[in-house]
Length: 537
Figure 1 (cartoon, helix red, strand yellow):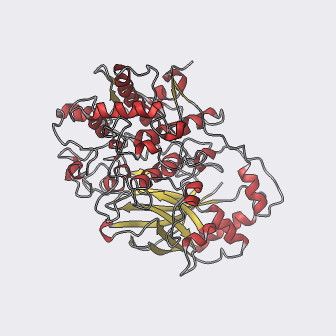
Figure 2: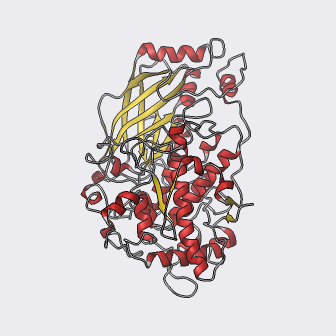
Figure 3: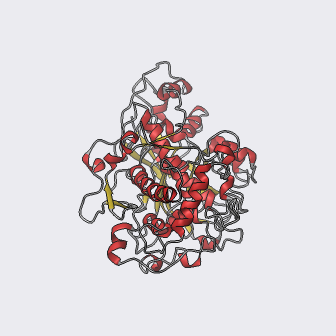
């Protein structure tokens, strides 16, 4: 039986009547009292995830330096650790990578150990564990627990969980996650695409790859080496992870200050970060609780990044030692000595292929099966935009020219569904997304009628993406040479509907990019190419 149980932060109303939150606040306060170069300090742990305080990181003109962050908290910028310590520990977070779930699990375990040691030293429970924020929970759990919104602790001292640069979806300091329940409680102007935060990724059945239940690049992410940001997010990372970061942090109403949570180089300075990631970790645990879902079994994932130039996953522990871990060691909660008080409910199995065939009017009903399709196999370009796209103000619109012969292949596969094989799946790619601000959420619509509000046409919504990590991925001197971020959206249901309406004969498709709020010109957001691919089955 596990020693530690991670409980819902909304227990006892999410206030300081919840002892898990009160002890967390005291632990965070003790870590914040330590120096930046102390491996057990709050600031050091923030820099493990990412930082904008070293000369190397602040060379990037796109980032918001720690020196400009408004208090609270009062973020120190010195003394820096020795360069060898920085090289060992800082700027480790794995994003746009199949290492995203296991790296963050180890990170939470290490932070939790630091807080627990403080709690025990203060006379608190030896079994204290990090709570989780289940923004998909009942009632008003889409809102941040109230303990994070109070400037003072019950004893009148400053509350270490309170953060000034945390602005919420509407930039008004009201922090909530736009889940379906959160959106209903906070209706916005539908002139912009809101971008709903969902747990749809939990229906995936492949960690890496794609099939009829799993969009590329898979639940856990694409195959990578050590990946401190850049490229394509896995489905768990894209939604809900990235979008929660963007919405909770956002920016100040005047646009001058980004929220801590909206940028990987500042996010872990906000105490709500770890409760968000505890929920993401909980979702991975729930996904693995389904016997049909398995993590990668090859050594490249099990052993972590071990190639030339890669770095090991390593965390400082309360006793001063360095703990090095691998993804394989992170797979099983039982061996890690903690559990969650509850796991998200699993959706009942659905024969996704059969349901699609019925909608397409096919007479035959075939069994759904797990048949992985990698990012490059059975994939053919249908069409692409002709020029880079600047996204400003209320968004942008472009036309994707389709190759008539390849488009006909898609039409033929839908017409002959279940007689010659499973029909094509169709995906829209946003390639080379670049910009200066990470907090925007972009919703993508197909053939949205001119002059209409995006919110009036949910049936044309291809999906939404959070730009968490955008500024770092856009830096030309950065790890990925400024290549930006890439996104993949499943437009198969929309293409199916066009087919059924006899409207797939056009040799072009209009694509509208709609942000959740007006995009400032200085955000400099652009998309190199909008492309559409068919995945033959």
